[in-house]
Image 1 (cartoon, helix red, strand yellow):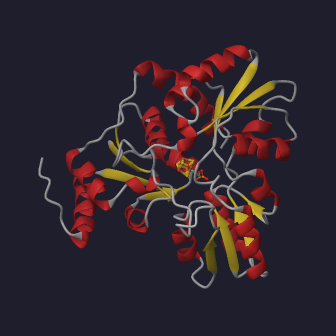
Image 2: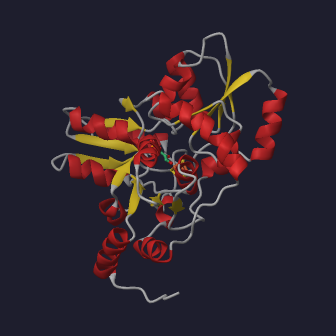
Image 3: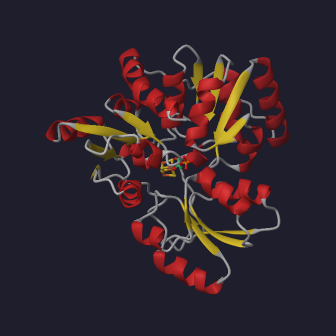
Length: 314
Ligand code: 13P
Ligand code: SF4
């Protein structure tokens, strides 16, 4: 394996040429760094990436995001090679729901529909009735007959938000995202006072007190759509700061301020897992066709069912 690393400009050229030569396609999440976003064939939120994974015809898919996104693409495409730049790019939310504990939880609460947020492992998906993302979560919950019981996992914050929005009772798994729980309510309130004309917008993985003061709540793509249609000029944005790149691209004359976090050593909220992907890793991943997502067949066979149910909802 040749480990010599080209410089940044050459890396970008090499990635484009390898992509062409191998007829590979790059799917990237909005939380990736801007260079990776620029190289993506498809850039979007978790739902869009799953929908793209279903449509692509290339034999090689590179998922520039976190591990569960690569797994989802593999479950949808068991015959294709699904690569990720770094297998260690995990997710605190996914890690907060270990399959052995979740199995026992389901056993203790029989007779429930198991609705899982896509930010979970393939094994958790294999135990689910239906999967959802933050873009379609309300639709998914509303698709379940009113007289039926629901367990929602792993994100308790999104779960609380959905209980409020849909009026459905749900048992919530106690999981959360480190990035969205890091926002400081006090600092956000101070920032809103400093910029009284600004709108405060937030991702539903944020905690309830933060969501309560938001002018708009939505998935990354919904936040992006909102700032394009809304007439305000300045926005305080409570989600991973990678989305600001696409917001600025789509609205060059508007101002986007990342919502402040509790930790004084950093000004914005970055997902360290998402940011494990670099141009170098993307280059080596395409060049060596490694690391690859490998999943047991029985997990693929079981987890495709709740994913297909979600995709069928549109
Ligand atoms: P969406 O892009 O689907 O809103 O998800 C955000 C997220 O946390 C992905 O890990
Ligand atoms: Fe997971 Fe949170 Fe990072 Fe999204 S932002 S990948 S939920 S840790």
